[in-house]
Length: 242
Length: 242
Image 1 (cartoon, rainbow over the protein chains, first blue to last red):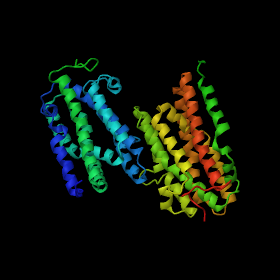
Image 2 (tube, rainbow over the protein chains, first blue to last red):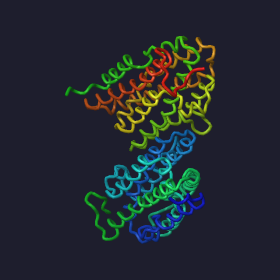
Image 3 (cartoon, chains in turn yellow, purple):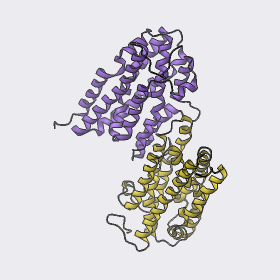
Image 4 (cartoon, one colour):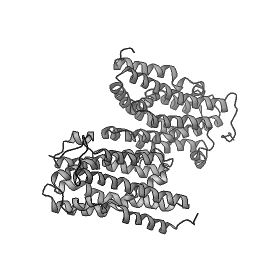
């Protein structure tokens, strides 16, 4: 096998995956941010994305269940705090539910995930399962899509506020908060991967983990696009815009 | 199958398991608390018990990875904080390491777990694995040994301070803290089990989970007793006092 990459080469390869495969490139996001969606399509997006958001603390707990290093657990746990909240801080999932509230979706219906697309649930559970089943290094690498998230959040905030009368500042609170949180998380994970993926095998595994994660995100938009844009074939049982 | 027990009957059955099977009944604990151990035996106990302490956050994370209910995760996470610490609070594992420091055990050696008895590691990993593999209700029920913990902690604090010149107030900080934490945790888990174990099958499963957990604790003392008390057969590679 070839010699290992340097940490800088590895980072460049990771960033290249983002440039080629991150879901900001998906036509669904182009339409969403560009004001090309109707109210029902934005509802469908927020409803399905809730499935992903609400699974993130389980994913992070699945990782922590494998971490023998107490210092690493002490660092990682703030991700669960960010999403679930801690004490008086309500957390990101609650902020997401304010978005779905604002989009006139019944909160209990959102939380049951009953109206979400099966493909959304499968993709999200594949992510949680990946973290269960892979070594911590690969699980941590799979979080590195956050390297690419701030750009999409900034674009989303601007595009959605500008283009949709039903979206206001209150509803984009989730994304505003992630503008600070995601870089902190991504930088920590990137440093960890740079330092710990040393052999060619480990480096290929972390690249594969990040590609896998971009697939998880992309597949969710494919399913939304198919059901709610083109051809617009909503599966049995899934949310049907009013 | 018989009719389900009432919540009070279930609680009585759970407490009966403690009365019959909790490791306070083990002769090793009787000796430990009664001042019958020498320095090396107390060292061996603290070294092995670190394996258990240090695995508890992984066990709790494994449970959280299964919890779909955000409120339940928000409640449960404080157990990880209690053991790993949060921010400036160092946490219970650090307090345990102060005990092993005080017993003149090298901290790096303790943390590697290299000197621990294989049977200790097997029992502890069986506990983490149980939580991975069983439904949340049973995983939560397995934590209910904490119902019985305050009595043993109080006995341990008094007995060890009185009987061992090498144990001082600083070294029993872990147990002092658990006197407050364990009842809070146990009461929450007991309420959860009372409310959620409704069918006879669920009730038998939570009783089995608690019996399993008492086995996990008991097996650790059997191994310590065998290696360091009688017949005193220390396995290859395990800690050898002084």
